[in-house]
Image (tube, rainbow, N blue to C red; front, top):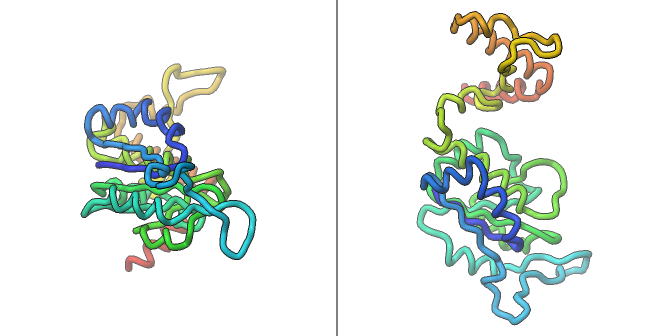
Length: 231
């Protein structure tokens, strides 16, 4: 997979891309990530990417010309263009799994007071990471990159570990324990020490359901609604 990012702040990205799983994924050629400064597609001495909004109002709006020209240069036959915007679909694990199967993602990071509306015509999808305001689309782009790349086959050491993670089966992940068996009078559940894999699997399923009911009932409602839609 190749991921290209259009941003006004390219220096925000090296930290996350050069550590941990994302670094290994790139070294192992499972993914390539390229960060582009949108100012490269401007044609004036000041490298202007924004202007005042028509009709008045506060702030500045990203101009269409550099974004369209950048997409003209970077888009390929199978490119999938994503606009990071508060108005987009709320990002989730199902969406991450779908995007992990794409050959080429082009992420466009917004900033200032937003985009010229015509830029939306470039996007195959608009995505938001939540109902809150951020300074720009850079952090959402990092969230998307991290969640998508780790789902590419071969990126994680144990593929089965993906099956047990939160949200993959519509539930939160079950509780996990490691050594020591007793810590400050808190004990590891005996079933995990039993060696009975069937009992362990059942316990984990029960705990995942219980934890989801306690902390995220909305996930259970979503699963029920999705089931009805698929009938």
